[in-house]
Image (cartoon, rainbow, N blue to C red; front, side, top):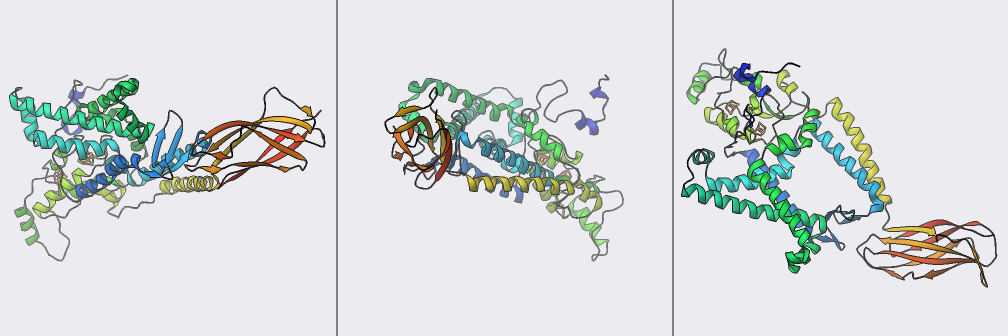
Length: 480
Ligand code: SF4
Ligand code: SF4
């Protein structure tokens, strides 16, 4: 196997062999990303505010007695938008999970890593919360770089100390928020009022996850997307030349050269103004100003094409648009476009053949999910014969013993009744079966079926009814 000697690679080809944030000797190259500003940053900020508000508030919102979203993997109980799912609904959760994955596949094949740039909690917290706090405490990226290269004076100690304190406090809030999705906000609040010593194991877990979040946002940062996240890799594999993503228009931008507003004005003055603006021979619109690079949170140069490190955060679009505005050139040298559309100078299309194929699979899955939801019951009933029993002759007739397990999947109290539908002549005597089910109650009880006609083995159909559901159950009755 041949080994690539990185030192032999030309500078402009380095990105093929190196990560922007890792030095050739393996040490970290710290990214001091410049503050982006512009229309995409404003839109992303608005989306992030909505997402963060949802994340923080959703565990405290109740719908029909259920937490709005609950992901209790310990007890295998899930609630989505106030709708509870029990272990018996596992097939539905599995199909829902599969549909979610296919949704991401369709979206990625069509519009690239939209999840990473706009919706992923890692990006939202890092770029919209932690990095903004860092700018507040430590100043601009240039100031940060200068201070970090300098000695540990009082100013540096104080700012670093404050940053660690704030980052840790925020990480603690995030760990608590995620915990409220797992054990529920009610249980979390109870544990908080009980005090940490009353639930020491949980508190240790909470501190551990606070440490993990702190490490990610204080130190690990973009490496989480580059190294740890498998999702970023599989999304990259779904992108092809028809995918619309954050792209540099190399046809328009190359050959890079230093332009300024006067050059543009002079060029325009020498042209027929009714014709589209054209560059002088041998000059592209890219000014080689590196604004798109210094603003990038993963430290890459988008002009090298689509790269694994690009999380499609759109910061470089805003940075380049600002430069284009300043020199009087058209915006969009970096924009949402597909490689194919840039090459062909045609508008990009969201619907490639591959996207249509994935879309058809997605429609089938969504149809299956909707059907399953429509047919889903709010009551689970399992009837089995009492273990180790056959039949007993009683004065009333031949009797069989049964066990019944019931789950009230709703958050409401409901009346409960059970009766024999067929055959006629069989009576049912409940043993410990309540007449009311409490919200989300799981009960196990027994009952006896007695056949006064002394007919031998037969099928028996039962009906179990609550306020808003009824289930028909078939079981066997054995005789001599
Ligand atoms: S910001 Fe725009 S003009 Fe400046 S280097 Fe990047 S692509 Fe070229
Ligand atoms: S290249 Fe542009 S879109 Fe991609 S991560 Fe960097 S700034 Fe964001």
